[in-house]
Length: 359
Ligand code: NAD
Ligand code: GLY
Image 1: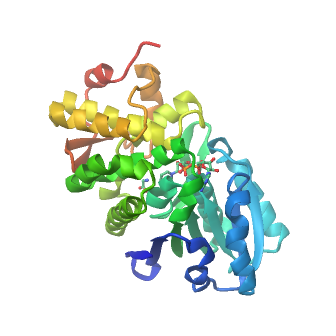
Image 2: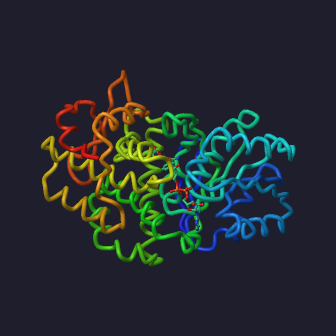
């Protein structure tokens, strides 16, 4: 097992990464203020891992309340969030009852938001079971739900007490979901670490085959970069916005294509391709860098063909983005592989040339 720390003073927390951690609950027990937890999961993950996590907890004398939600991005909404509150109140959960998110980013984001607001703040622990959640969404304390008019528009910054990433859970993950996680891993190379990007170019096949050494290193390095960025800018006043490379376009693709049709990671993959094409069009990066980006995104099994939503529809969805300031859309663009920046100085004509318009 490897352990990293997200350094946030008194709210610092560990990220444990390794195989078999679901059953090694000592990492979890040390964070419980009372011997009571609510495990929030979904109908897909529950049959696979709920009992595996609950059994050793019960054996240690912990009262476990399971809360099983429907599965899907389309359920990341007020109604489903309210079901968590219904269950917590129905079971008389207290302020010191720890909420454990067992699942992917949807379960993690919703459970985190429920924890942030249940009795004005209950402790919570992330137990991510998708690659995307292990490298991104479980770390850094962004929690929330979607609104029909915009993704992740309702939420809170609320840090977990610990993140416990059992790499064995990736063995049951569908290949498409694995690729979605690889998109966020590629993102870290692109915004932060050219050597990591090059390492990914030579290890993509090993990662897709879940080679234990390769997958552990990729998760560790991704969490290390994310922890560094979050420690420097927890509430996204500057640096943290770089973690949204590909996301402004990606959120437009997700919303425009209907939540759940394109996976978040797939939309981010195509969004990074668009961010690269825009950077190339603006003379920021060279054509060979863009070719490497598209080749790596494709090698990860992600779409490089971007949906033709039309410029106005893209602009409309991109206008509902948390990076919008004073009505201006801000884009994360590349200076080179390994370095990104945020700018609102993007002419409409450049966007028109990059965004496919024919339906
Ligand atoms: P997800 O939570 O929908 O999980 C993907 C699918 O895999 C689901 O069907 C899920 O039930 C299933 N699943 C989960 N673990 C499994 C396992 N081990 N074996 C088999 N199936 C399993 O999607 P995701 O990609 O994990 O997360 C996407 C969500 O995360 C989006 O809502 C996105 O907005 C959010 N996100 C949040 C942050 C953040 O910083 N909070 C960052 C990135 C993404
Ligand atoms: N996934 C973007 C962030 O955590 O800031």
